[in-house]
Image (cartoon, rainbow, N blue to C red; front, side, top):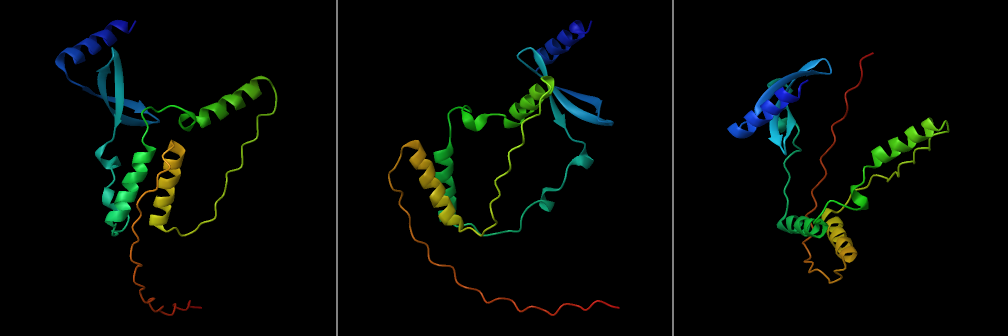
Length: 173
C-alpha cells in the first residue's frame, strides 16, 4: 500500500521546511507542480512551463489617465463591499447545484429542468464616476448606512475635435 511512502514524504517535507517539485502527466501533457504539506496532507499547486507563460504586456489595455476622485470612489466602493466571511447567498456554487438537479432528474428518469435564460443588457456607455457614486450609495444603503457622501463636482472634460476620416481603399476587380 502507498500509505507508508506518502507519510514518509509528508514527514520529510515538514521537517526540512521544504517543498517538492513534481512532474506528472495530465491531459496528454507533462505538467509541473509544487508539493507542500498542510495539515498532514500533501497539497499540489500547479505550475507552468516557461513557454506557457505569456508576456503580460500583450494583455494590458492601452494606458489611460485615472483621476484621484475616481480612485477614491473605487476605494469607497471596495470598503462598502468588504465582508468578514465568505458566506451567504452570494457565495453559492450555482453550477454544482444545477448539475446536481440535472443528475437527479436523469436518475429519476424525468426531464431535467430547463436552463434559465440569461438576462441580456443592451450595451451602453457609462459615466464611470456616476456609476461608482451610484454603486457606493446602493452599497451603503444595503448596509444600513444611509448618510450622504460628500460628492465634489468635477469640471466637465474639454471636447476634442473629431478626427477626419480617410476614404477607404477600393477593392480591385
